[in-house]
Length: 137
Image (tube, rainbow, N blue to C red; front, side, top):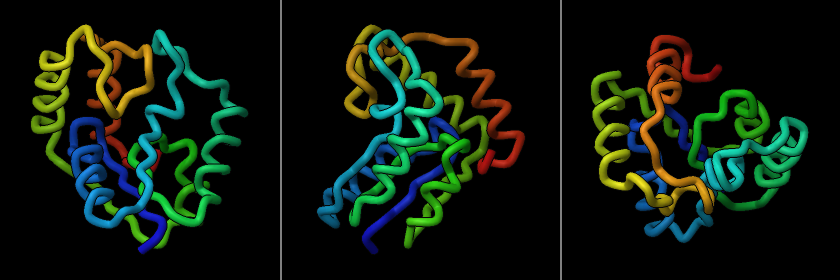
């Protein structure tokens, strides 16, 4: 187990699991949120994002934590192990809301610098849509 992909809905427990797995295995941990977002919640440009993910996936050892379905094929072809977190919507929503309250106004350790935790209706709608559809989108 050298390249581990951890995917699932926001709030499913990917980051906590990934952090614990990294501590046990010594594999480098890549939180895709830290790679995608720039300060102030500005996303990386699409071409730059795909190049970044391709470069990360080419590394010989990693745990990658994050959904980002648009780059799933780039990561899957390199992964030797995949964990899919398919939790109930109510649990994901509860965890996201709890996380938002707990970290409100601060940047979480699994998030990019300058991305301060906030309450975001669009993000909650995204979780609802993601949960209803295929997680590989």
